[in-house]
Image 1 (cartoon, rainbow, N blue to C red):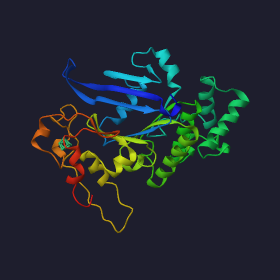
Image 2: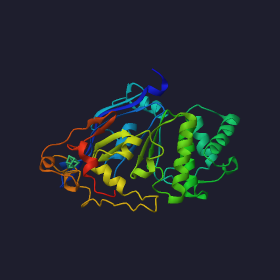
Image 3: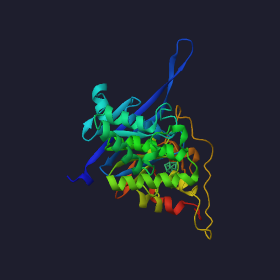
Length: 335
Ligand code: SF4
């Protein structure tokens, strides 16, 4: 099997239920089903975008994959090895190969460490470089992310938001990981800076053949970086497809609604936006049948009763909708 076709990450039926405690005795009275049976695979060198509204479970999924949060159930295989249940010492060794870039770069950087110390510590703790070699590597890492080695003695607060995210990327790259989970890496940044960071991540991915699970709440952010995109709604994947197919011919009404919210660059074409009814339902009490049915513009009576499975509706294109084949004909004009 070539590097390009090798599965690096395989997630099967992943669940994370958070208990709801009440009363003096803190009795469990229910569960928030943040992630409720999610399965996907990411190949070596591939970028999988994971997209959905706040509270859909995408960030919890990313953290369960790294075991920053312990999953309730399911399997996570990294490079063929099951990591659920691995002892902490083994997990620490593996974490070098699985890095995360956080949404808020400032809170993830130690304000008391200069950039040089922060990166040198990472390199020495993992036994990758010491002394002069570490100094040289710090300079290389800063150049790699578009910063100057002359900035190495500054502290995180001396950098702008975009520069701090570059530092977060440099720190992740320092340990030469196989997989990077980018958890909403641009949502805390100004719109003008977002594209620069996404372009940097894309260029690094191509240059270094990195593998990303790229989490975002906006389909427009992952469009140009992802090979495939998975759309999550209320703890489940509702559509998973190669990027071009998903953007050109979505097969789930929720994806259609998310796409309609992306502003059009064509001034002659005014898009119709589908405004979703109400808020995301409570994940402790998800709606019966299809979880999207109270907000869906295509809902039929059967949708409130039967849960649609995620099924392949075109080669490599999966949708969890009873009427996936009719989505394009039922989509309102102008979307
Ligand atoms: Fe909408 Fe029904 Fe499809 Fe769910 S199964 S997305 S409610 S049409």
